[in-house]
Length: 207
Length: 207
Image 1 (cartoon, one colour):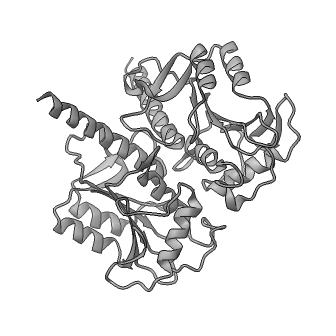
Image 2 (cartoon, chains in turn orange, brown; image 1 turned 180 degrees about the horizontal axis):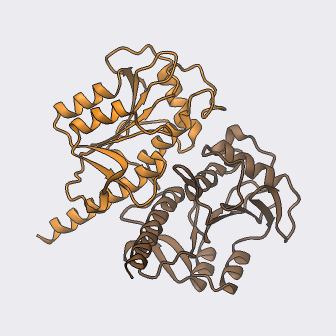
Image 3 (spheres, chains in turn red, blue; image 1 turned 60 degrees about the vertical axis):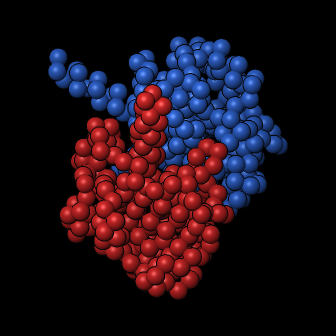
C-alpha cells in the first residue's frame, strides 16, 4: 500500500455542511475532495493499493482522521460532491480513537498528524514530506511502492507540523519547478511511482 | 501560449443545468470543470499563458466552443462549481461563429474540433494528440512552449475525430504507463513543460 496524508487545517469536523458550499462553510473541504479524486482514480477503474488519510483540524471538534481505502472503497464517483458526500457521512458518525466504518472503504476516528506519524514509524514505513524546497523526486532513487507522502492544504503546513514530520521522514521531495496544489502534486507523485513500477516489472521480465 | 482542447461528447449545450448535478444532467460537465482547474491553477496564482478550449457536443444545440484564457480570466476558483458556473454563464449567451465574451477571460462561439484544428494549423502550431498508445512524452524532444494538446473525455475520442487529429498532428503522446483521466493528464503534461522551461532558462543563464 501507498499512503497519502493531507492536512485540512480548516476542514469542518461535523457533517453539518452543505455539499453546495464545500469551499466556504465546509472549510476548504473542496481541496480534500480533489485529493481523494487524484489519489484514487484511474481512467478505467481505481487505484486499489492506496490509502488516503484526511486530517481534519477545523471547528467544532478538531482532530479527526478520515481514511479512504482504495481496496474496499465503493460509491465514489470522480466529482467533488461525491467524495464530499462520503466525508459528510463519515463525519455524521461518533468518532472514537478506534476506526469505525461509515461506508464501504471509508473509516473515521479521532486523531491527528502525530498519531499517524507514530503508526507509520512503528510500521517502518518510509515517510516523505512534500515541499517545494525538497529534492526533485525524479532524482530520488529510494522511492518504494509502500511510501507515505504528507501534504498540506492551501495553508501549507505549520512550523510545528513540519518539525514533527521532518523528525521522522526519509526526506523532503519536490514535484517540479513550480509550486502546485496538493491534488495536482498527488498526480505527479503517482505518475513517478507508476514509472518506477513499470521499470521494475521490465527488469524482472529480463532476468 | 499553450492550448488544451478537451472534447465533451455529452456536455450540455445550454445553460439550463444545475450546478448540483454536473456529472448527470449536465452531461459529465464535471470532467470539463476539472480540466479547467488542472490547466489553469498554480499553488499561488494562475497559469497566464494557457488557453483551454472546451468542445461541447451534447444536446440540445451541439457544436459550441468555450475558451478559458488564463491571461484575462477572472472570477474562477478551484472548485468544480466555480468553473461550472462560468461555463453555465457562457452557455446562456447566444453563440455565433464569432467569439463573444461572457465573463472576463471566457468566450463562447459555435464550432467544433474541425474548426479548431483548422485554426491551429493555419497558425503553424504543433498539435499533439494525447493517447495511451502514444510515445512517452518524456522522450519527446520537440515539445515547445506553444504546443497544442488534444484530449478526449470519459468516452475518449471517436474514430472520425482521431482521424482528423492525426491528419494534422505532430505526434501522439502518452503520459506514462497507466491510462488516466484527462484532467490528470493535463497536470503531467504541464509538469513536463515546466521542467523543459526550467532547463531552457538554466541553459540561457549559463551562456
